[in-house]
Length: 99
Image 1 (tube, one colour):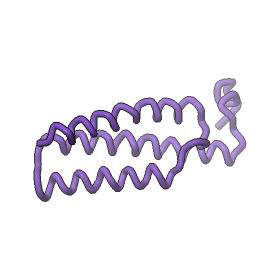
Image 2 (cartoon, helix red, strand yellow; image 1 turned 90 degrees about the horizontal axis):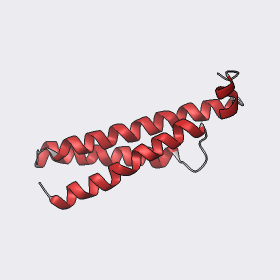
Image 3 (spheres, helix red, strand yellow; image 1 turned 30 degrees about the vertical axis):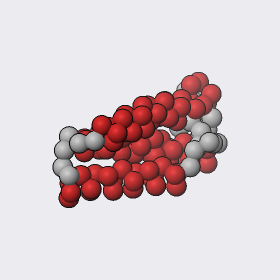
């Protein structure tokens, strides 16, 4: 188990709750790329597979939790894209007139 790997995952992991909150409240895809989110998920998946096949330790759960947070952000991106295509704004949803 590498302390540097743990610090890296903690730092990356600390950013995702803010990104999720922004996606949830803004209801917009601007400033985010689904392709980027997918690449990050694949990267975390590769980290999980490396842990499973070569060096299984508790850090695998950090990879899994980070991958889960990025997946939530990707799901919100898809929701926001659907809202944008239907012309629903954050104000419409707040007022109860949106989807």
